[in-house]
Image (cartoon, rainbow, N blue to C red; front, side, top):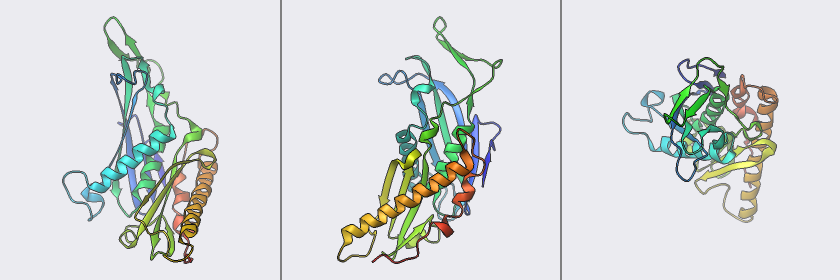
Amino acid sequence: MERIGSISTADGSALVRIGETTVVCGVKAEIAEPELDREGEGFLVPNLDLPAMCSARFKPGPPAEEAQVLSEKLNQALLSSNVLPLKSLCIEHGKAAWVLYVDATCINYDGNAFDATLLAMVAALKNTTLPQATYNPDTQRTTCSRKVPRLPLQLEEQNLPIGMSFGIFDEKYVLADPTAFEDPLLESSLSVVLAEGGRIMQLTQLGSALVSSGAGNSESRKDVVAECIAAARKRREEIMQSYYGRGGCARQMAESHDDLGNTGRSDTPRR
């Protein structure tokens, strides 16, 4: 399930639910001076918060280590995909640029926060509009007009990143979209982020056990990774065709992702 524009005070927002995991994301835009070595670019700052209210596994206090790791993965996924060219956020070269804070909060955690958060961030960016900003060299100030329509972000539709995560259980079973109950039982996890045409933008693995040890181990590992990538490509194609269309806005792209536990799971042991 997905809801667009769920936060009225944000410049863009979305709420995504995959299974029982629910993530809400809001985009807030500010103006800052570009970095010296990137004077023609703006900033994209994604962050994920896993508060204590979303699950008993998280405690009050500083950000959990899992949240920091996922935030870095999300940052890499968004930047490596180039879904939003940072040059499009430049207002005046070397003087002013947009800073987009893409803040996601998990309000209910049941595993696989990465896939849900990436979907929420992409949907929120698609929902984001910015006021037309003008830099005045005399006053060295940037002003935003309220008299003209706000403009959507210049997203590269062909680079929209869609992620799919897998878990390895008992060195034999590949589970798609693992839940919080399954997470502690997994010996390894694999996340695949794809752009249009099935291009791999990010492939990350935690743990070392992909298949049972024994003869042909190397080839079996390649087979498992290839199968996961193929499943991720199929899922991305289904999501893009069913809920995006050409340049369209996602309505319920997470609903098809809800079925991963039924259609994407392989219960066949690896040999």
